[in-house]
Length: 291
Image (tube, rainbow, N blue to C red; front, side, top):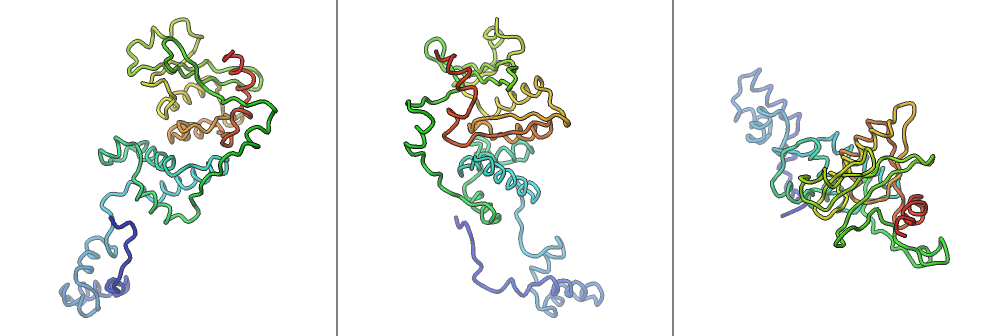
């Protein structure tokens, strides 16, 4: 498939808007036929016929997933992420674009719904239409930078734990600088919520129970967690709440970002490769939990 087709003839140049308007004037004022009006105005007959029906020149796509406003908003989100020290890869940006489509309930192809990511060709054309965006390869973290915080070998931070039979269980926690905490969330490695109530027996009051086949945090589960966070933190316009996150892919949910904006939650994401040193929970909570 040709990604960027270049017109090799000047046939379309003669069908200017002024000429087409003049041809319509000949048809309405002087009772010219469409063929006669096109010949006298010097335009293509088929182009004049389309212009009469649709009032625009040339062809347009029959179905557009993004209008100009939605595309501009996507550009704004990508630039905002870059300013937050979290430049997205092409794959992450394509998944974010799909979340826009999904949130707006736009009808798409079955393959798009199955893969939950927009086509690469669409994204490359999107980049060409928006020169403010650029793709850059991230710089690898060197040994000096990774060990600069202390003389000991650093450990990799994790938002997860393990339980019986070594199956993965995610435990997202959220604590304020004052020491207050949001009731924890348990993401159980299950496909359905059939026995979720029994799993949550004796859990802390207000805890949120979620499921995922592998026990990982996903974009859909993060949406539910964001609603859980807002219900307990209770931010309002005069007193917004700052929420600090790591740069996990699940945090790129369009619904969660919109939910945060609408409920006075300001999102801040740690720069890549330094979460295990900068995230306060790693030093104050998770280190003790691992021990």
